[in-house]
Image 1 (tube, rainbow, N blue to C red):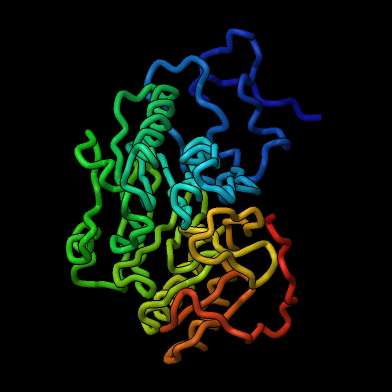
Image 2: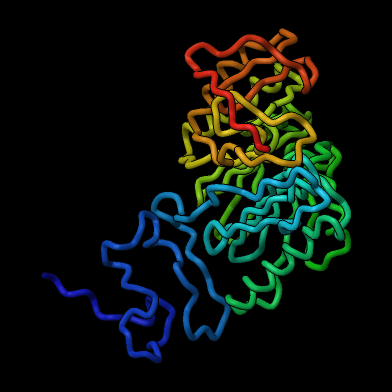
Amino acid sequence: MPQSPTYNPVLSGNPQSATARSYPNGNPTLGYNPAGARNTDSAVPLHRKEAVIHDYASDGPAPGNLAFRWTYGSNVAAKNRDPRVQVVQYNEDTFVLRQNVCVHWEAPFTYLLFGNKGALLIDSGATASAEHYPLRNTVDAIITRWAQARRRSTVPLTVALTSGEDVAQNQGLVQFAGRPDTTIVPKPLGAMKGFYGFAGNWPTGLGRIDLGDRVIEVIPTPGTHKDGVSFYDPYCDFLFTGDLLFPGKINISHDGDFVASLERLKAFASNKPVKWLLGGHIEMMFVPGKYYARFATYKPYERVLEMEPSLIDEALRYGREVQGKDMMLIRPDFALFNGVSPDARTQVWPEGVPNINAPRPF
């Protein structure tokens, strides 16, 4: 059996462990490391004396874990005792935050990503009040802990929105006004285009947010909102799609833009590895085609957040089907509403999809 290579602190950045173990954080040459872990940090150095630099060149998507079940509210919202902001750490540099459904029924997701030179917060939730929805305090606490572990005195933060006109994702932005070392991408469409360099190539161009060796790509995706954008993270291979594509009721505002945006996402995903699509909400139940009504604050049978990239093709196919028609269309993982009320109903059930009644939550 070949011997493991001798521990080299120069390569790892770790001085010799005080416990005299050759590999205090695990031997990266052994086969027990999960896929993608060999080129990512599983732990910060034990005896760090300067800022820790992470290698974001990952062989495959960086490993991590998402919650199977999120906090799901209460029948009586005033009696709910869950955290106002649920925090799930996907991996050491990626966090998923969700607003409590009893604070706002849309329970939007926000995403906090770190790089070697800064952090990015995608979306800001549906509630402006820091008392009811302490998003900034939560983000500040995560950043402080992250910075301390990596010997950083400051971590510049960029706050960007998947849509500046989406009231379910832009209300918490006011909490970051005046925050030191913070850049807020402007909400107005023209100013947003200028920030990303889209002034002359909207909606076909690509923008970039460089977090330091972790460059997030910005893709114009209007359709549900005229200023919609999606974000691609090449470290985790996530595509953050906001309101354009998520497990819920997709309210199309301009069907031509919606189809064109899905076509661009399909072309983009054909050239980049995509592990999951992560949208801005969950409204679907775990049974196919069923969803929660608006204003519901108790959602115990939600579908999981993550969506397979193949759902871009499905959304594109059925987006073309509803184009030019005032109608709703149900699919197992989402429902399209084009030119109709978000409370519209239909008796047309998708062929080949089992019609299962979800259990009553009472």
